[in-house]
Length: 102
Image (cartoon, rainbow, N blue to C red; front, side, top):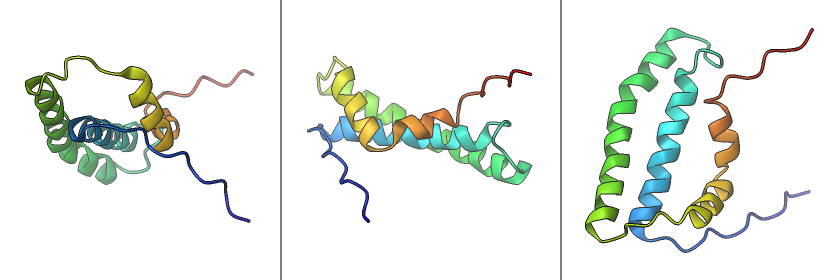
């Protein structure tokens, strides 16, 4: 049985799409660096090395939005896009889980 189809992505400008993609790329790398979820130093090191270039791409997307006059971040629309792209699961890897209760 197939899972239900995902809802379509909301309409985004190219810069907004780059912003969302860049944000999720940074989040994925931070999840790999997070010592709570990590398994080895080499994987965390590689993720940390890649983080700088992904952060640059994220900055560039935001700078382009600003230059084009896109001064408002449409949070509800971008949140919908993040949900469609599995952003809730991906950002959860950045968090420190609560301490188990005895």
